[in-house]
Image 1: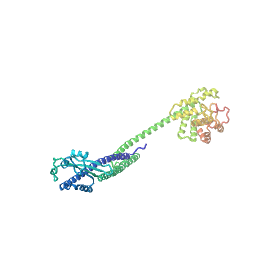
Image 2: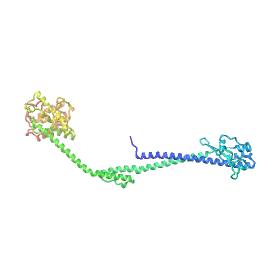
Image 3: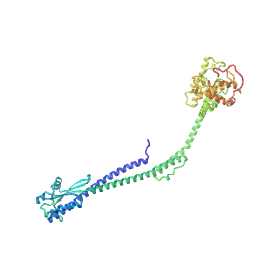
Image 4: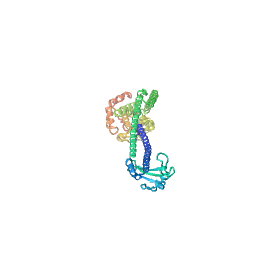
Length: 488
């Protein structure tokens, strides 16, 4: 899952906070503006009621009350008044009787008469918003319009009420425009804040962080400090100083670590060298006990190295096969002398015992975790297997035989044919070539046989370098004894 960047998280969090703050702010402003609008509407209704009151009083004093409807219509035409009604209170009706032009008091009007306080009913959600204002006229001796001069009532008596319905569309429109401006202003400033935050994160966080990572990598490779003055913020300068301190400690310990690695590599080389010498010495011990031709172990080792190299094995595999080859016959340490050192042909039973040296050698080596000894175990077990499946001890066939086993098998037989043994004399080179050619694809891997023939000069040179009394490769003619067992 792709993780979000610091910039994305910061902008997202900030945007969420700003949007919530903007919504709350707009809601609060809208509520306050609505309250203010209601107050303005109520004041307008009160002002209109006072005008009407003053006009009706003037009509009454002038004795032209029959003209008041004209006056009220004129009031409605020059203001936002949709409807005006005058209602007499019980005290006035008692004194002057029911008026000819007044409306009858409704339930709301009765409440106003009883409480002496105006009532306002706002219908702000209809297509044409209105406010209905029922405003009482209260008898008072104060001011120019001394009500008590005409009305025989007590101070504070409700004389009547004016029921006005005002059109407040312009106030709602004004409120809508104000809210719309607020919303657009909030969005505009939100976008400005987000853009500024985005740029700030880019300039002061993302780019410095990427720059710090690159400089830290270069500083480590070149072993040079990061310059904290290249960063504008205290935090990144502090991180640069921490990186410099870390690199200093690493560099200080680096040489010690390299020396420890060199010492460890030298120790491993020494262990490996000691193991190789031990393996070779064990092969020589087996060689001497078996009374093999002198330097047989060395020749088989070098023959195997050459064949493995020419067969395309890796350098590591070539070294493994060369190091492990000396132990190919280590299992002969478990074969009785009467069989191992018998000068003549072995009987069938004796030969079965002799074949057991492969499993004995494998059992001696198979439990080690060292690559050399594991390779030696494979070679000890398989160097008498044959390409056609006729070998022992497992009767493996073709490439089922490990390449190590196939290489050492050919190297071992080649040396056995070229040198004298207790049961045979050395063969001439032509006879060796003929016999090996005959066993190509039967006893030996055909490819390895081809490599052997291509490398005869080098192989003969190796044989002469590690010859037994100068006899390796000598032309001694045909032999009568043949090869012990199956030709070896």
